[in-house]
Length: 141
Image (tube, rainbow, N blue to C red; front, side, top):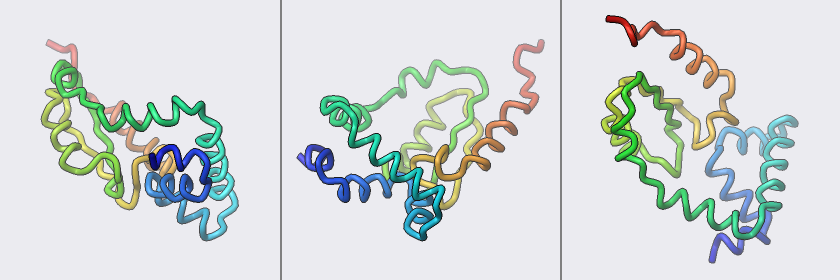
């Protein structure tokens, strides 16, 4: 019911989205123009979603469980988690890390929520580049 209400209540939707990306929301609230424009665009885009998609995306996220598939991954795997994430908590992140045989890399982004690609683009890019340029010795005998 609350998802249906968010579809027609921009302020409620913005409040919920602010929980997902606290850095962007805080910067927008401080009046930082680029972040304010980004946040407004994201809220507008969410309001423009097809009704079924709006509800089903949230429902799918709440039911997501791919631990069986995760156990099949064998290559080096990087997990990135924002310590302000209100959707995926530290316990779930740790379970995921343990479930993936190739995962021995967890980057915790402090002060970041569920959307590091929006909240800390440069830092996230650095994390990715550092990871993919490591020599893991994969494929060597």
